[in-house]
Length: 402
Ligand SMILES: [Zn+2]
Image (cartoon, rainbow, N blue to C red; front, side, top):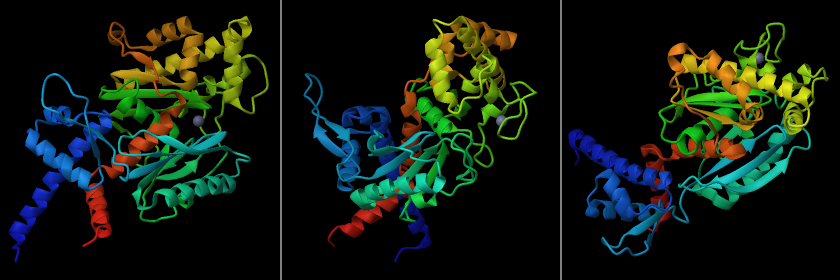
């Protein structure tokens, strides 16, 4: 009979085994197609331990091994890939005009399975349509679905949507998006998740402190430190668009005055041109950017928005001290359309000591897929934990013949 002392000892041994298993799975996630020999080298494992761990992970359907192409040097090894019957996550990207659902195995590569355009933005209709798509995927993959993450163009607090100016929603419950209460439903702001993806696997991969800024309708973004977005106390942090970097005479739909949001997007360009506020500021901004080379008045309005963007960005760099800045969507388009004005306003807003060595400001690498990738990253972070692997192992053993 086990004494409390050696029971605790055996728990620790099990934790230790999961820790090395997690490290191997993290390597496969970081570099899909990595060889067992390379993983052993990086983790400082002997060939024997690496073989033992990968064989255990294979038995648990957590990875598959295929012979690697023979090289002239070294022993034969295998390539590690996700198991064809292994765990998956569902990622949903809910945008202003459309939605997508993707499935990703443990290497984090999303495969878009369903997509559609909103026929109306009525929350009940949108959520109902997406819930049906998620339900179909759930039926197809069954118990293999371990987490669902929704990226949404909305402010998220305590894991719930509290407000979306872009979709015209107030507080909305997304609980209908999972039919199975055992499968966790995670919800994140789209710009935050896009920034997370840039920091983990995009333009800023490898940097410890990353500031991501994007413009769609208004400004979104996040600060990612050591691979984690800084959410704040309630999860609603990162609302950079509502810093008072704008015109104090303008009242923002969020309720505050002087928001940065109002001076950098399609609404700002229209106001500058004396045109009525556009119904769809994103499309309006894209059309204005396309007219920029030929029309000096439009170019001046775009340059004005680019300066407002760069000035605010300089303030954020002063405050947050990122190692790398990534610019997503229209933020990068505004810089590209008015690069001299953007660069001058950025330099002008930086504190003097920063000017000789400012952080690089890079174009986001994942484009409009950033939020979807970020949703996959968030869902997999939830699954690839000691508890997540133990739950999967328990499920496997309950399915195998005794
Ligand atoms: Zn605001």
